[in-house]
Image 1 (cartoon, helix red, strand yellow):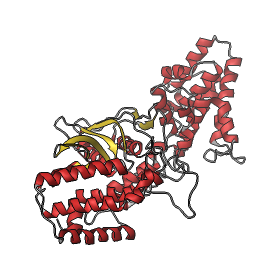
Image 2 (tube, helix red, strand yellow):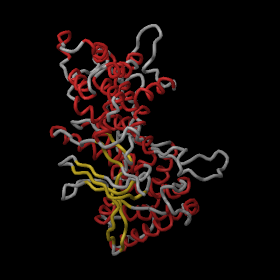
Image 3 (tube, one colour):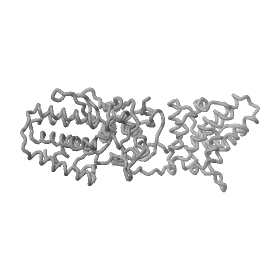
Length: 502
């Protein structure tokens, strides 16, 4: 079984925002390491190469590979002209996270309310929004989780039952201390009924809806809804349908009429609660007392304008912008994940974690990639080694022979180190300059590095059957990392010029 990401609601980006939106989608894909794994011929050899996402002739940006996870998944694509995004199986880690970040971006741009989901379940968007804030210099908040009622209504429209895990999980997404208190109460009461609302308050999780002994609180007023309707039914001499019709008429009466409302005084208690609460809460109380399906009954009164606006909390939001998160932090896998599954560890041994050292491909002068001191030393050593090779006594090869040597080197490195792929742009560059001494020296540098790191790279062996779930201390061993980083340096022309001078 696969893991599928998607979107609940309509992914409708306004025409005037599509250009900016598409630029941001492409930046998410590039910085998040989304690539396309392709097979191409180099000097008569078949090589698998990585291509960075860009629009093709058909107007589609396709990708199927995570550079940071080194995993291939089912083809996904983005069509800039239509602002249309589609994914299939997205896996468990980096590929899922980056594609989900695109779906979160839709939440921030779409004309209508919607939410990203994975396998049909909602998830905490805070780390995704934090990364978007860093990428685009924004101050996005977690406003998506501020209105539980809106989420609840969206799930209903998408076919989720009140008993579903997604509906129950809304309370865990709610933004405490900044969300809409009244809408939280509406969602809790309507989705679970009076008994579930009472349990919520008793669980100790209800600081947002306090019961105050010294004054009448929102919770205490809500608890009057069902008893008030029940008393009406028990005391009324009218047939059930006639009584329901009276209550429908009151729910649909314009609140602006105030005291001029034309209703039987017997309904005065109901009207008072309606003024204090909302049509949704009172409709739920009616559904409970009359044993009705809430949503079916609500469809008959959904035009009601009684919205509980008496509660100031309804419009008061105090959400703070989410603190930005770096790309390395976003795509990093925590120690608790299954891919760190080796039982025995050496004393003081640390797990592999993504850092800016793994983002050499994205380095640019004045950019956000900051290498560690260890990486700077490693790069300095490669610079020294390359200079010695370049100054050495060796003859230039014919261009075709140099390319064949490079292709054979990459094939052998992929076989030994596993999932070592060159970048398409790098190979095209080397093909165009294969008769250059600088480029041939770079091939020799890569060959020397492959030989130097064989002992460290050998730990991976033939033990990895499921790459995504395998122990990353094996798959991202120092020897293999050295090969990946060298290929990134050779592919990044600005960094290569800075370091190697060509």
